[in-house]
Image (tube, rainbow, N blue to C red; front, top):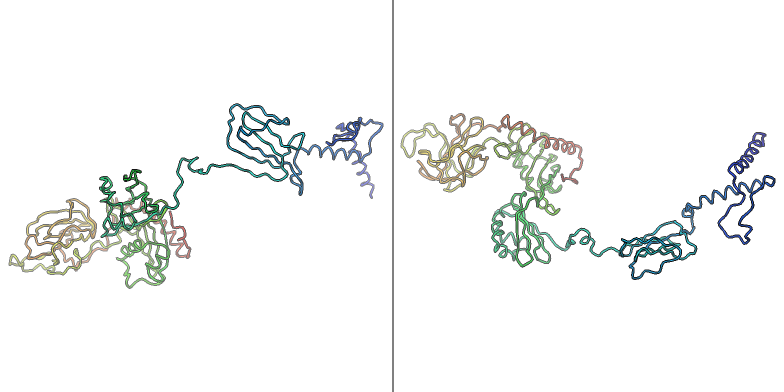
Length: 547
């Protein structure tokens, strides 16, 4: 050993002595256990003349540290070491034992007896003069402190019907079932109620005048839901427009009550994208796109894509649409909001928009209508009986008189459609035309429909009508030899042959409407952009279509 090491060792020994002298640490320490001799419990202070050995001083320091740390339950962290646990339990006053002499707590006047509550404390020693349990009584309520060697378990006695006790709501009957049906075109009330397993109560519902009147709104596309248990109705709800709903419930006296409510059915946005492999409807169904949404896609893009010949394997379809939910269940879908169809590499996009005039239609992102501005024929499956001819011989007047339109022969009462979006400029009798309707369209176009037998119910002058909307019915009023429709097409009041005239591809929105459209369409444009990127990268977004 070097001289430096020896010197350091000597200094260390001196330091121990200095610590003992400086902090006046006594040579005797109560180690916490009983000594067989009374004089062994207290040892006189060490005099300067008789210093204890150096090892004794070190031992005293270590024992002192251990004693100071004795208040910390270090034994709980050591393996195979028994630790003291205690349990506090609150019991009824009738079974309370007598207070123990070990510990007594002051009485709390406001404490009342309650249910049993047991709490366990881990690794906390119990201060007591005997190993038995310590007990204390607080004014009719016992707190029992028990000593255990094993870990205690927390035990709480809860009420059997927690929901009813603490929230005031009855428990949900999980055995109840919902039956859902969407009313079809020719469904009667009896057929609809048979679909939801409630045909037996239809007569009882009709006996209530308020419910009977509301049932008249259960028309085509109305979603109807009935909740029942063992065939007994618990609730029935239906919505004609997914905004307001009529809710029927038993009144508890053998009858039923009903009232109109809002926010019963919830509308959420959904999104999906898929590639064409086996067909539009099959591939759409694979990603859970409803068939009525696919039909809307076909109807919108039918002006630009021939779906019977032009659709190819690998074409990409993206849709944003509305789903209908009730009581957390998906019960239907309604409007297509936006769509993208990539056909043979060409991108076609559309966005749904309602104009200031109240007409809802689909437009390109630039604000032009997806559909053609006009359709050629206002009567479906009709035969042309007389063409446009400026030098025609009139069959009634028996003289040359220009035929400024086209005649479509059809049975009396055949519906007549508006060939384009417009406003009713004239509705009434017009000379030899008989019962006539004139529609005014944008960009200087007008159309005329004459010889009508009658008009559509509630059609008024100044009313906005949409392309394809029924406005009247075929007749033979005015100078007509038989039931047919006389149809004229004019541009700036100049008549043209409706079967051969070059029709505008689409109408554009007015400047004022275009500003509103661009503001409303921002969200849909962003969604289509994001979905387009996902589709190009084959990213599956169909697992989370809610929104």
